[in-house]
Image (cartoon, rainbow over all chains, first blue to last red; front, top):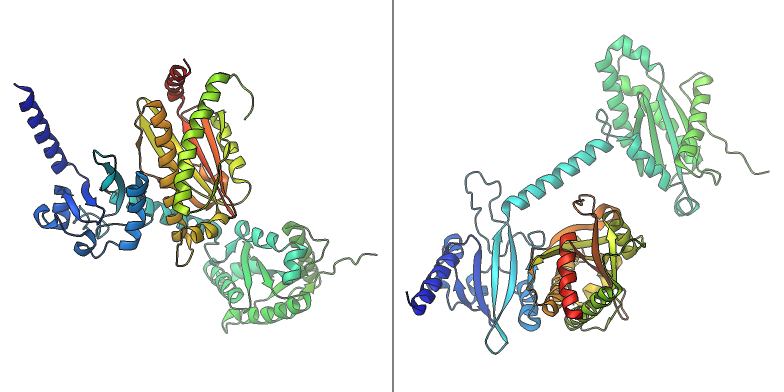
Length: 319
Length: 204
């Protein structure tokens, strides 16, 4: 075989490869007119190379955002550098259908693209090549993971029964308010609520009814008005942060809450009541745990002095 | 980084430094043209780091604030590595202004800015180093490591298939604008041997 024949075979091979490779290849000039349009582009767009060649990219594909694309392509012409776009920026450059029309879960094909400079013999870049990769599966996988992570975080931070925050996710909220700066910007107070005789209630009514009462209490905490952060700290013990309220205001909110708890029985003869401990912030309180322990002491006092009442924790005044 | 048996001689280190200076200069020039602003040329830091120190190296780079980062693999002639570009999140407002980005500066806009800058900086740096060593590097697609994350969270999925490697750190700042970014080039352990051979060849 002579040298010339081999070269022609090589070119044939190259052309075959270009046609069959499973990525999109488009060559554009400085006016964004199409010079090459491979079979991938043909198949997915339904526009044949004969039609595409010589046409302006932006005229042919109105979905390609001109300003955005020029922004990515100009550095390739001017700086002879490669640029890249990823599906996170823009799901696709060309709106093609999912290549698996039956089992694919998205309507369209997610795409990553590379834009590479094509140097002419005079070392200038008069053409660029846009390479389009189908990354639908990667993208869908990533989106699924993100979604799953979000759901997990939500589940982890919530109390399953009431939908309130749980202790772990609630404590940091309280911790953030434990500073002079935070309290100076806006005072806040802490309530700890414990249902009285809950064990007896459960025994009397059954656990499902007991759960129902806990759920209603959770709902009641969320409808108090103002900015509040409620949490189920465990069992029948609840915590509530009242933002924008000082200790005195918090006590009146607590009393209002206590009265509404009495109505959680929904007209039945069962008596429902709660003991509440209230603690305002004080400069001596430097952590969420300390704050919690103040409210806890007040709660204990409510329980000890006959339940169904509210106690405000008295911070020690400096001598 | 800390002192441990060098996999680089002093001469080799100097050579890497020189190599990076040139590549980084080219990258800075392109960035300057893109932003139409003066880019302060830093002194690159060449070090050999342990895999356990990577997080520390990143900590140095990002201070305490939240960061956004992309990474991109490169490979050619038996040399492989990864480039990482990290932006301090406070940089985006100025960057948007310089790049004349109109529209709200949300997470999506920041991603655009991050990607545009990464394309230019990483591409130019890799190309600059490759050119001097006569290697054509193939670049993989950039991947977002994270946006608005704590530096510690960036590498949580990190692999530990390597023990020690060559790290080139370049800290770019833009004059009169609150823009700071860190470009980190990391080579795989096997690549360092090949790279050193190429470097020795240059040194001869």
